[in-house]
Every structure is written in structure tokens, then in C-alpha cells.
Image (cartoon, rainbow, N blue to C red):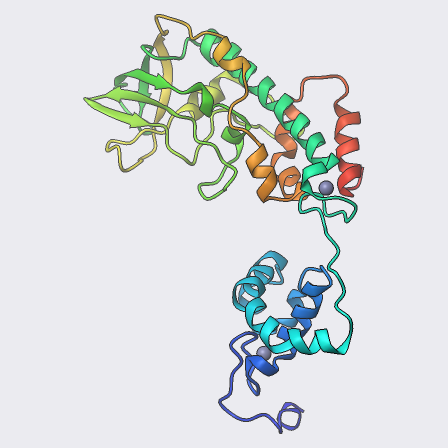
Length: 308
Ligand SMILES: [Zn+2]
Ligand SMILES: [Zn+2]
């Protein structure tokens, strides 16, 4: 019975770490357990934070952040010294932040090199496809005239002028949907229309996957997915380019597209292999251009411990 179980708890005493009543954080069994787990190099166990995971779900990354931000420093003061006195301090085993293995760190991580190769090859292929289909095939680029459409059933189709396109912004990140995704890359291009410069908004993508089985890129999808333009440059009502009325007078040089775009190195330093693979799996599988695709992907997966 809870009433009985909690008999020794002092009422109105709530722990700032676990939000259970009956103790303060300096006597918090959960904080102590998390501290010990962290000292062993393990992720903290979310299921111990019953109160908070009611809101978060048992999502370990959030609980890990919670521990690191609001628990770790205190835990070191409360439990650190005693632990050190009780037993000789064990050296925390170094762990690769990218693939999770203990034999090395990010600096010499094989999985990181493997992912980088997969990503960069697929990214380059995407950029080439963009060049072939959008720049050469459709004539998109600065100076092209495009017919805009702002809503379904619109009577007239206003004409706008493409004012710029930054080839650096073209890459696999264009295909990551979702306004909030930290992996999405906004295509940097804009049109002049009714005297205003309108930028390509953040939460849309140029190519459109039909489904994962046949990620065919249909020309009409590309056109209808190309633009969302607003009547006010600060507010994006939905709209898009209906067609290219007259192509750009000068085709951009292919050299712009043969180089890499955004470097993936920074992202790989901040995130894990599994997370990146989950994010870019379908893009890499779709665009990786070489015949050794399966072998390369499987080698990477093995390095990370993902099922092959
Ligand atoms: Zn507590
Ligand atoms: Zn590694």
C-alpha cells in the first residue's frame, strides 16, 4: 500500500531531480543511480524517472540531457567523494561518440569514414541530378521566368523572375522534411515578384519521394513541389511555381555542382552514426551511384552494429 510504503516520507518534500516526494535531491536514489551509471560510461536509465517520463515518454536522449544539465554537477558533490573513498576510482572507459565502440574515439572511427563516403557520394549524385534535371533540363536559374500559382483554382498565373540560386545549398538535406528538423537544408533561391524578393521557405523540398519502394522523381512533382511563395516575404502562404515560362538566359556552370556542398564533418562530430543513418538512409540508398552500394552500406552497418 502506498500509504504504508510512504510512511517515513516527510510530506511536502519534493525532489528537484526526480520530482518524487519524500526526499531531497541530495538523498535521491534516482540521481545516485544515474550518477553511477554515468560513471560507468552507460546512458542513464530513463525508466527510473517515473514522474518526468510521464511527459516525455521513456526517451533516453531527453533523460540523458536532463541528467547532464540538472543532475550531474550536484551528483558529483553528493555522491562523488564517497564513491571515491569507498573504492579506488575506476577510469571511465573512453567510448566513440559516433559509433559507440570502446576501442577508439571519433578521431579514428572507421564508421565515420564509411558514413562520410556514403553521404558524400550520394550527395554529389543528387547535385548532379539536380543539375541535369532542374538546371539543364528545365532551364531553372537566375533570369528564368516562371509562372506562379498561389492557390488551387486560381484564375491567373502571375509571372515571376528567378533572381538567384545558391548551388552550395543543394544537397541531400533538401530532402529532409519537417520544419523543425535539424538536418533539413533550405534551398537558397528566390524570385522577384510584384516588386518583392521571395525566398524559398524552409519547410519544403524540391524532390518528392513517391514512396520508399519506387522513389521516382516525376517532373510534374518537381514543379509542383518546387516553390511555396508568400504574398508577404515574411509570411509564407502556400504557392508554387507552375511552370518555367522561359528558361534562364545562361545555364549555370556544371563546375558549381561537381563540388561538395555543406560539409558533413561537423554534423558527424555532433551526432551519432545511428541517428544519421536513420535520417539519411533513404536518401543515400536512392542516390548512391556506384554498383558497390550494398557492400558499402553493409560494411558501415556492421561497424555501427546495425542489422545487415
Ligand atoms: Zn529524487
Ligand atoms: Zn567509432
